[in-house]
Amino acid sequence: MYVIIIGGGALGFRLTKRLEIHDAVVTVIEKNPDRCDEILTKTKAHVIKGDATDPRILEEADIEKADYVVAVTGDDRINILVGLIAQNYGVENVIVRVEHSIYEEIAKQLGLTYIINPSDTAATILDAVIRGIKFIEFFKIEDKHTDVEEVNISKKSKYYNKPISYLVNSSKDMIHPIMVVRNGEILIPEKDLTLKEGDVVWILRKRRKFLF
Image 1: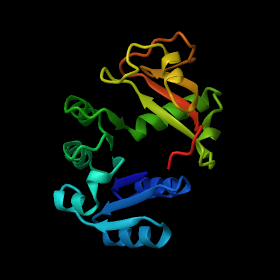
Image 2 (image 1 turned 180 degrees about the vertical axis):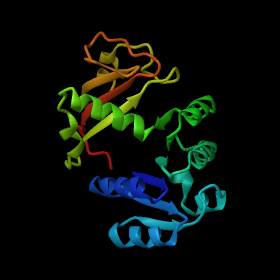
Image 3 (image 1 turned 30 degrees about the vertical axis):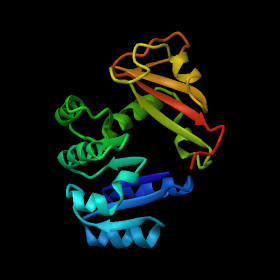
Image 4 (image 1 turned 90 degrees about the vertical axis):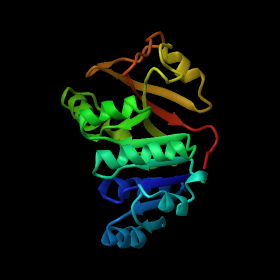
């Protein structure tokens, strides 16, 4: 699997390290030369120093071959723009980091479907932990065959308006739903629970076959 990460800050660096556990091929695009040097020294990733909003830089990274493009710079506008460019190149899986709600709505309106808001995710986890839900250990899993993932449900999602059992049964992997977050409320993922727009489903995925 080939992943292009836009932004070599703390999040991009940690994501690179985690993807290496799963033997993914990673290219990081970063403008800061010091960050580039650190990533080159501490990871196996290919690093390109440059502006990811420049199509020439993306082409240098072989964006047409990317399975995923993940834009996680500290600038919401850059992440959204890169996400749109990546979609224009035909990348099927585009993930953008957005910190501000106004840009999150803009990203959705522009057709970006996989939007990560780290602050919201962290708040959800902390809220659960404070209230005694002890699932945070899952996020430290180092087994390359096991992942904890969040699935964001939009109207374009194939899981929209379907029972959560459909998500489980349609997967090629072994999936166990951990919880569903709906409007800030944590729901138990009972099999007949219908997934709605805005839901975030946390799942534990055990691959039947190693994908990378």
